[in-house]
Length: 349
Image (cartoon, rainbow, N blue to C red; front, side, top):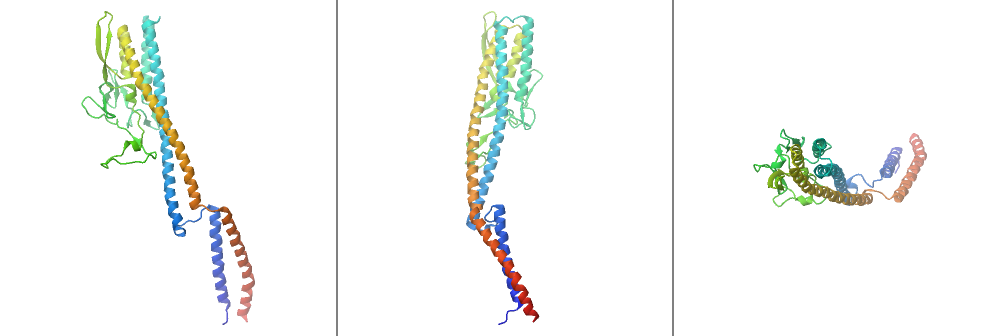
């Protein structure tokens, strides 16, 4: 049987293409560091790699959510700390106005102005923004805390003194839930679960991202009892909101009513405890997020190891194979340079 040059050429080109293809694939492996690029090339590892990629994506989302939550909590904590300093300063000034040497009209007028400045600062901090979000204002996209014409603080259109709170929700005097006062949550990898009715989610499986500023600065009303200048016991219903209390303290100063001013100062100190609880609450949640962040970092490292084991290559083995394919390709080229001219001469004969 006579072997023609066409047969030799076709066979050579077929083998050369196969060698070149294996060489190119091996080069791509070394360049990308991936053992395969199609699921069909390794079904078992491919499925594991897809599951791992999904876990990596979720881990990255959880880390981003945790970081955003930490930043918002830091902003909220800073706002509360500033309010804390302002309220402490007011309490100290009230003490001086009541018992210290600064009881003359000029000093009291200065104290009244200090209260006004504190009220402005209080509203500014309660309306603190983080990334266009009012961090102490529920889900409101507009300024939540605004004093009305009577000098009373209004939260989302409802007087703070008329608000009640039940099961974590704010209600107005008519029993209607205050607009835009609900809570917001974020998934940070706690195992998001739906409630039995399937219409909501288990709040223990997500992180609460809203910060109830009104809870920590006061809402609703309570009774305040004190003795007036003539020794008569007076019981008065006053707002629990710090802003409103400062307004009433201004009125007491103007009326030169030290007894009422002292009672209001004590009432302010009582509400101050709620503010400290809020600061402690944020501190606890921040510590939890710090631990969660570290855990997610550890999980990310483990997932990267799994990805390397499933999608990656063994450098030593693959470099050895690359050398083998390189030698095969060089031999193919050398063989072709020798065999093709002879077959061509045979064809000419």
